[in-house]
Amino acid sequence: DAGVTQSPTHLIKTRGQQVTLRCSPKSGHDTVSWYQQALGQGPQFIFQYYEEEERQRGNFPDRFSGHQFPNYSSELNVNALLLGDSALYLCASSLGPRLSDEKLFFGSGTQLSVL
Amino acid sequence: SQKIEQNSEALNIQEGKTATLTCNYTNYSPAYLQWYRQDPGRGPVFLLLIRENEKEKRKERLKVTFDTTLKQSLFHITASQPADSATYLCALDSRGGRRALTFGSGTRLQVQP
Image 1 (cartoon, rainbow over the protein chains, first blue to last red):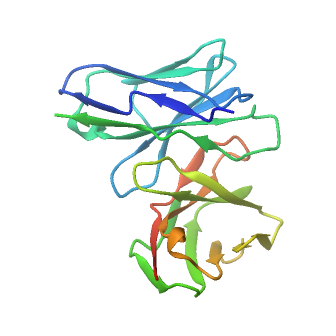
Image 2 (cartoon, chains in turn purple, red):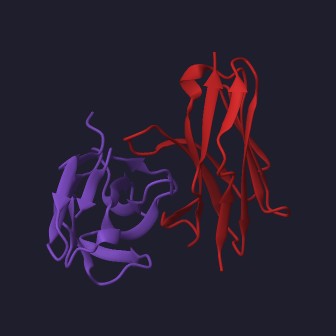
């Protein structure tokens, strides 16, 4: 049973570029959330997708956008990259928000470096 | 504003002892609190969840307490082992069960053999 998979594992970009990160949720999960984790900090919630719609959003600018596909996989897009966007980007999957199982399953993340 | 505090200093203990980690929060009324373990270069792994109406939860060598009056959770690892060395994160749901978790910055535990 595959867990949460993310690609790529590492990425180097320059300021002003755009990046797309990808995530496949754990088998049977339909909800995907994205988190940003800066070095030495805890993960910070970016947004959550369920039924192909953005359901909740954290305190992140519109440069951060996403998408969920019919097979529940998801993409995170970041435009106009800034140096401060350098971080580990984590994808977490879970069952639908109406169900009572609240724990998240995380992927190993994509380490993004902006130069 | 809402705030979660975990001891930012690393906790060093001897193998076999009990490790106790603290999570304090302010301006929250969480429906539940979760603890995760994170190893370097990996994503967090879920350990335990405790709800607002529960005082204590146990799982093998792990125990979590939740005091909504003190706004504090304690996470205990008994009979600690070097393999328990990792960063431990507490997380609260700020939107009542919708899984938009807010994480603390984590406490790094180092268990010496």
